[in-house]
Image 1 (spheres, helix red, strand yellow):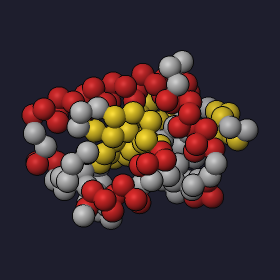
Image 2 (image 1 turned 30 degrees about the vertical axis):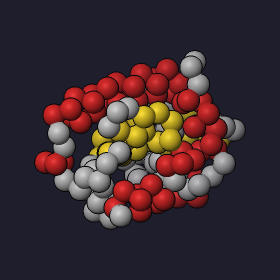
Image 3 (image 1 turned 135 degrees about the vertical axis):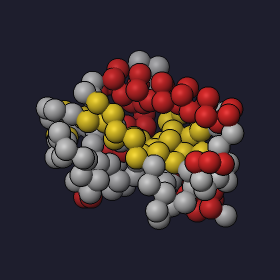
Length: 144
């Protein structure tokens, strides 16, 4: 039940860019910065303490892929990872790439409004479910 609700809320069918054995990586439907992603468990888990050693090891694979792809495409200076699980209880991490300077993508300018402080998660509320998210999916799925 939790997994299905999460899959719907985060539009995993449309926004997934890569998966590992235990994790799903998807574009965040409400971007905070350019390339904001979500790394979510592929099974019903609602506490970090529930993760198995295999899931923990596989999380490093997922994070490695995320950081490599985002550096390749957008050159962020830093990465913030948030595991809040307040509204959506499935184990997941919001990946917020951080930028000192504006970036251009999909015909839009992307600023990191919170830099160098904590990210402003609602900075791009108007871009929630925006068509540019599908451009992000295509870019991150590509081999380049």
